Length: 318
Image (cartoon, rainbow, N blue to C red; front, side, top):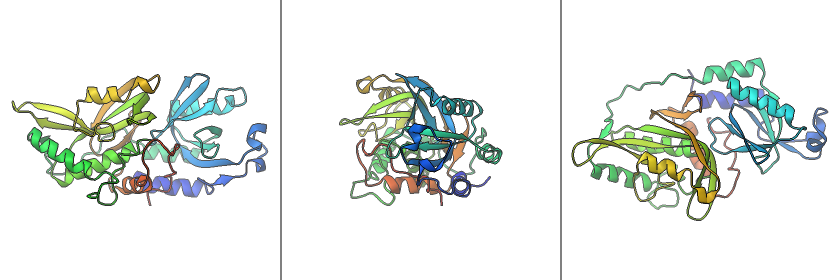
């Protein structure tokens, strides 16, 4: 199968020639009166993987991005909500338009049969194995801490970071790219890891601001403690800058109730080469780090919880 992101971006470009550009809403006779008064932003074709009600708004999550999108639960939007719900059930694509500079969904169209066939071919429930001589268990805590320090030294804003740096300072989105780049550092040192994906109505604190996610992902590494017993730890400097932590502590940090109502709906461990896992278990890969490097480069100068929404990365993959 072709690299997902190479083919995905080509797919979006071909089938949605106006993707990620402002479009004049009043040129479409099917738009509602509300839509006709604004210029909508076409964010292309993507797969919704969750939709949940929260205080009269519906929060929608899509493949890859950790950001929530919202749609008002109104009679006017019901036809769009129905399309999204069916697409979540079928794990099939829709064409999405948002209000510019927001994550508010203004219009949704069903994917074509060609769209559905393409996305079904790109998503897989099979874990790809890699032929390598990597060590799956780090020999001791000292080595684990040394690897953590090496990963953290690649954070954007540090003088030792190479290009692309890892965007630990910008938690709004991009956890999938951060985790994949961290794993590449482990691989370069001869080690491999798993990843853990956690899903739900997640909220986390950076210390200065709060961020909301539909999911989060980080490295899950194995190491031998002083007694020679294998334990697992999460590496995620975006939440824990002091060192590796247990996966329980990490998931708890993803539901920081000081940032508002939050909950975990599920979590799952995957092989380290998985780039994205949907809540239903479908997998995407970025074996050549094309999307990884592009996303990190796009976010490299950002920090804190702004801007939100995150900059457009739909062109990544080429």
